[in-house]
Length: 129
Image 1 (tube, helix red, strand yellow):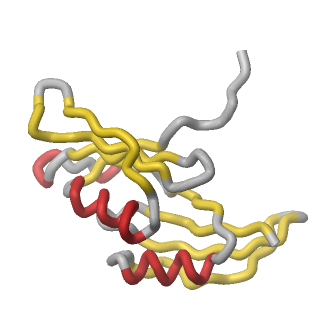
Image 2: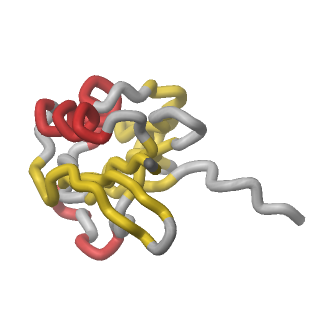
Image 3: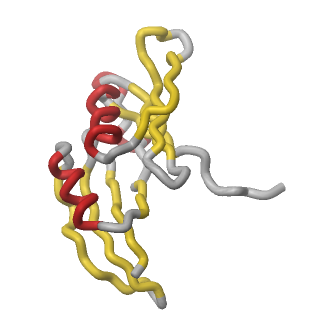
């Protein structure tokens, strides 16, 4: 057996349409597939390719079913321009968690920034320098 990476990261959301717009229009992803939730044909799950094989699965839960602890810790998106990705996210409605900064992670030099997405999920933009 060989693990080849991840297929997708699932995100519970209180508003699937808002999250879909954020990850597609705001961050430039492409919705590649959608399918109804079993037993709830009016609710769709969306798969959004955000580049480089990274896929976010948007799973609608609704306000009454939102699970505070069920979100992922954060999603880290590789980018060639942290500032531009950060600015695009803010323009799409994200909130600032931390401004772009140069960091040192052991022997790795990088630039990163964090935002809060539409459901409070943490999105990191990351570039190895």
